[in-house]
Amino acid sequence: MSDVLEFAGVSVIRGGKALLDGVDWQVREGQRWVVMGPNGAGKTTLLQIASGRMHPTRGTAGILDEVLGAVDVFELRPRIGLASAALANQIPEDETVLNVVLTASYGMTGRWREKYEKMDERRAFRLLDAWGVSTLMNRRFSSLSEGERKRVQIARALMTDPELLLLDEPAAGLDLAGREDLLQRLGQLARDEDAPAMVLVTHHLEEVPPGFTHALLLREGGVVAAGPIDEVFTEENLSNAFDLPLSLRRDAGRYAAVAAARS
Ligand SMILES: Nc1ncnc2c1ncn2[C@@H]1O[C@H](COP(=O)(O)OP(=O)(O)O)[C@@H](O)[C@H]1O
Ligand SMILES: [Mg+2]
Image 1 (cartoon, rainbow, N blue to C red):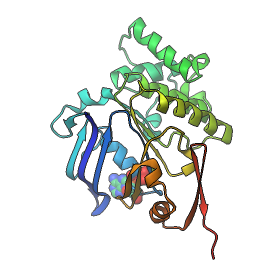
Image 2 (image 1 turned 60 degrees about the vertical axis):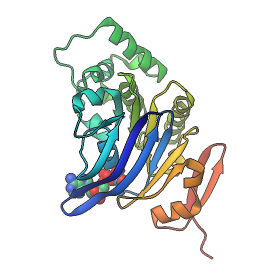
Image 3 (image 1 turned 60 degrees about the horizontal axis):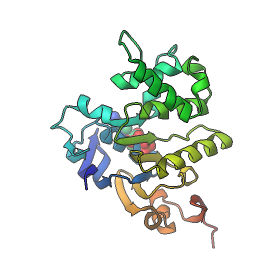
């Protein structure tokens, strides 16, 4: 079985503070992971490493059977699809929706003089269509609603047919209908056997799409629990990660948590 991610003792130290602290984590083909933890727990930092955009201060990060530090990250990055707020912020004001998806083939965020094949354009269109936003292809990305933008970003992340898909808080800022629509689409992708391995970051249990198989709980850069989702999402583990007694509900593959009633 090949390894998608193999982190051993991964630490990231900045200004004397451990943003990640000795993280051991394995992601295998076909798995769909949720990474959860409170604000500042190190989730985005973890994805920065998983996407080959940051190196650990200590420890080793294996990505798609390569080791970070011993591989050309520019060869590695097209094999990984990433959707994050930081990446979206790099998209130029006047970029069209079609170009936002198309430029992913070159690992760029703004179209310059590259020539794209008809085949690339067809693929970009098909992805926009699959995510329900193909009618917007000639609109400026900056003119879209938050929900539309999120779907365009996921289409972009899938453009290179990646082996690993990383989504950093894909449902952040969406209204209820937008969130539910996105989670349903992500749930379909999660159940698709041909879809890449997936890692989705969130700090809301309600934003976990159905069909996700594994979970990693982070607190202050350290792993609280990791493994099959039903073993990790327990009241004890979640209360520990969020430092608050929580009461957990699970219904039809979806989760919800509220503060436990004080006795
Ligand atoms: N370059 C940096 N230098 C110092 N602290 C940082 C740096 N980048 C992030 N942090 C801090 O590290 C912690 C973890 O950040 P992050 O990975 O973004 O957390 P999360 O995505 O879980 O909210 C936060 O407290 C953040 O303020
Ligand atoms: Mg974050």
